[in-house]
Length: 191
Length: 191
Image (tube, rainbow over all chains, first blue to last red; front, side, top):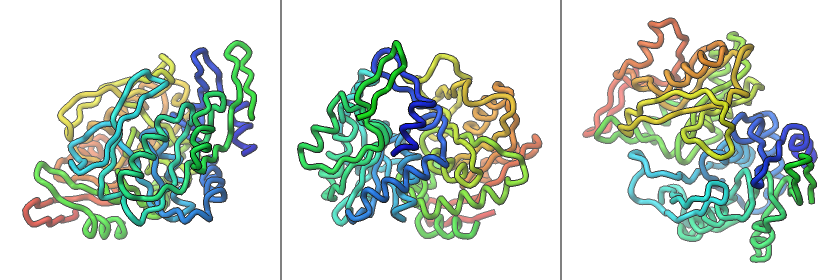
């Protein structure tokens, strides 16, 4: 997606420790006019897959998922990272190891919102090692729903999480794949 | 907003402990076709206020904020509840006491995304005592931005947080105000 690549080059910042900071348009301040285009692009890529539910994970995935769900005219469900008073005990849950934060956390969704008959498109902001996506895929499997595919906005190609998922036969579409980044020069090379 | 009241009556559930559960369409599973209408309604209510930024708080506010920002054609910024590696140290921060969870937490936004020249519409899913809104209002004040007003989807009128903010001269618009709820009968009465 050329518009995305342009935004990454114009507005993204590369930092030591494998960090591509795009919080000016994707995951802290959110450019919703741009995200509307992201939603349309994911719809174009997955419109023949029978998708009837979008699944993402709080917090950065929610705005993306909202615009994708708008295009498909279907509900969005987001997995929660912490147990709250307002979520019933009857949940699907699994563990996710966070590469970025060096921690492990539980994710969960209410059983009421995912199950047989659902064909699920998982979306998220970043795909690196793929741990968050694998956690969400596990929830889809546990629920008896079918996985239509995964759409991520930015894939860190050099971490190969996307390649491994594709090798397993999962349809994974990323709107930009970063092949290399250089924190000293700020250079970003796309696949 | 009649469509919202109908959804609350049809799909909402009342539980002991002052809980109105609307996680089937507002804050776990999200009806994005409906939220698009919510975005249009907030635009109608605040379109003459010179709004150029939408502010909300993770996680439940994000999808709402996204559709409001889409209507205004302006950015959405969401306050974060936890410090992450990917947010710079240069933040505005304040404390919020959670009535629902009985805890106090920090909220923060990067200084880069809020400041002089911004006219801010704050949006959120629920308004009860008003602690989360007051935290967000504090961040707006600290940043030197101007507050255009606050829009919440569901206000618990009997907790009077909205009334107090209005008495202070803040424009607060809620799309449905619940005047009373009965956990035994499930009855919900709107103001």
